[in-house]
Image 1 (cartoon, rainbow, N blue to C red):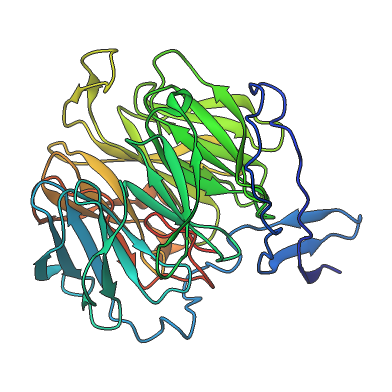
Image 2: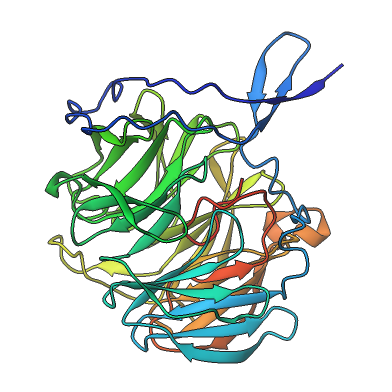
Amino acid sequence: MVVVLLVVYVVANSGDGGAGATAPASPATHAAHPPSVPSASTTVTPGGGAAVDVYSHARAGMLSDVVRTDPPLVYVPNLRDGTVSVIDQRTLKVVASYATGREPQHVVPSWDLRTLWVNNNAGNSLSPIDPRTGRLAGPAVPVADPYNLYFTPDGRSAMVIAEALHRIDFRDPHTFALRNSLDVGTACAGVNHVDFAPDGTYAIATCEFAGRLVKVDLVHERVLGYLDLERTAAPQDIKIEPAGKVWYVADMNADGVHLIDGDSFTRIGFVQTGPETHGLYPSRDGRFLYVANRGGHMSSDMVPFPHSGTQGSVSVISFATRSVVANWPIPGGGTPDMGNVSADGTRLWLSGRRSNVVYVFDTGAAAGADPTTGRLLTKIPVGREPHGLTVWPQPGRYSLGHTGIMR
């Protein structure tokens, strides 16, 4: 008989970056308290083994009471316009647009699911949206260089990814007052995307312009080490598999995803997908990883790695086999970038970074989650250079940030 238990993880500092990593940096001068991570589902098998399921609380329809009545909308930051377009998920129409700040990069759900934060990167501010109304909820909060935004699994800190400053700033998750600034250095030039270990002890971030990853101790807020990929690697989004062991890292220059053992911090494989691999999103049933291939080809191997082209597609990787099981082309070409999956798992929403549209794909979930039936449903015109859109509401107990990393 299979017994499902709720396990509260006891957090311990591992103290090293594992094989393949460079020497760790000095610890922060202050001591952080070990995080108290909300319980995660663990299945105990008859043989006595335990299997983690990272996304067990973010399955289709598992909406928290906090978000259950929020209107089904998609929030699209238009980087070049300094605006957010709001799309009704039911009608597939833009129903509102409002100014936020200079160069909005991502729309990020807060840990407590009550605010959507627009990351005004060049505007050095965060604009709050109330997801209950779909409207701006007050003045922007001043924050230095908010390219991206995450939250520690225990909800105690916001992690502002200050890409241009080579920093991860740990801030109060509500006021955004600065608590500690972690300098990841030029060794992690282009720090931008993050995911988290199941027990909350560490995170791994991508270093786009340095061709490597950085492992961060969340207990003491220090760098544990760096892991080199390839000389011209440009890592983008990063996602952990449901089993909590292997991390998938999109590389827009290698046109595929690296496989990383997070605990040992070593590269264990690579899966080819498509040109300019960018965004990564798990399916609601936890079986597949949707990979957005932005469709460009590198025209120079010098930072910032310029790309051109419109041969975008979505590749579908099976977590079970770690191989591509389907590819969804965009008829006529396109440039899919960042986004997420609808609450019921039937649609994948992606911004068209160089195409000024939003793509809506049928995932095949309504027909039994057959990825080979996936296809583009429509394109919705929005502003100039749409980037990290958020689909809301989403299943889950809390958000770890970005466009909705739900747990």
